[in-house]
Image (cartoon, rainbow, N blue to C red; front, side):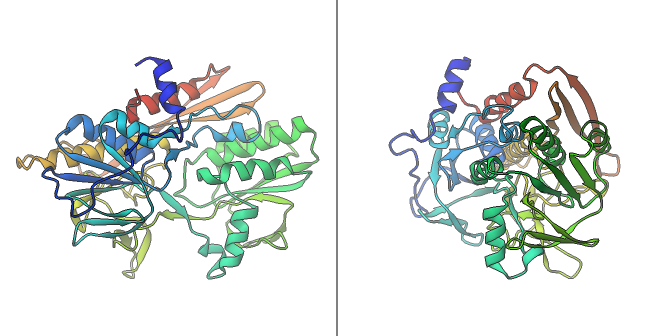
Length: 428
């Protein structure tokens, strides 16, 4: 595929094609087996491309509320003006039309597992096989309980920027920052892209220094931090980064600008507050969440870690950030874009094989993950983190992590991101 053709498709946000978003309703009577993918981001779009390649006989529909995908993996340098927004925005309907499946822009209202229908703001859609890849959501109740007014204020005034629709407001509020205590936090795992908050802290400190803004970045870490970054904070940005380990946020008052931890109250002038995370809707409604020791629904989807099938529904598969723990050794897969694409492809291969009803058990494949993070902005220095997995003899998934320094990089992170767009989504 030529780079010019790829960028033409990726840059056509909002263009669409007549009829590309329409799909047959539940009573449409399709003779082919129907696969519905709920969620059109890294996992869902990767699964759609894989399904179209492996099982072109299937009737495939992708549902997402937003017609345009805006990607996040390289947003931290953009946030502080170190780079432009380097990842293109993707028109989901145009991509679907180019690959021969269908896309509908709609809100998912509920999943009817008994009737095998997905009810949306654009009608109901029947399925024979369902893949749920709705990502993750913020859980502000951990800080605010039932106080929705305070939760809404915190998200509006001090957004974390880990969902796409917060990015522009986050950057505008940062540009208006005149100095003082700028607080960011690292929640307890699992969360999205584990090194991302530390990369952000470093880049914010660099930004304060280069803009000559009098202030500091306070990092409240629910854990002990990543040693590579905590050393970097102390060596390169003394006085600009205050790292506070084992400081989980217990509550926030967004009106008086005060954070409460186990060590007391902390006033702030501005903040980027990342609450605990959980699987996105409509997992709880569909009864797909794992249960805790008391039998109550937990925050993440229960899943067969090898086949990505729901333990409560043999025709329903799950992929991406919403997955619960997959191993007693390390818990969750890292919630990165790269990992989501691999999980989407794995789930697609399972669906393709099972749809053919030949009795053969689909081959089990384990994912991998790559994450590029900045260690410093000037001179530019990056780190590539690779995570691989193997199945032990006792059936338990084991994890291995390696780190590779990349001084004086040449856009390896950008090439990685564009490569995911091409190889995982099938843009052409």
